[in-house]
Length: 115
Image (cartoon, one colour):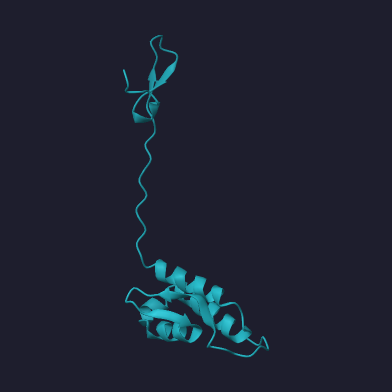
């Protein structure tokens, strides 16, 4: 990349990254090795090239390892399925006694169940 800074794979993360198999990524070198061990299919997911780009930027420009940590954490956490969104239900409107004033019904009506 040509930043002119000294290249250092030995920079350490402020907080090591714990992998699901129990291994810890403590340095940029550890992160590089783990990324190289990933199956090609995983490496080609959009999150991983971004993490690799951040890793190389930090190594070649002697940047803050937090940038790499963020990229790796995002890539690791996108593999987990997101909880499906629960569809929101609209509250039903019911005509009032005289027919022209709507009354909220259902659990969201705010009516108290206390006698």
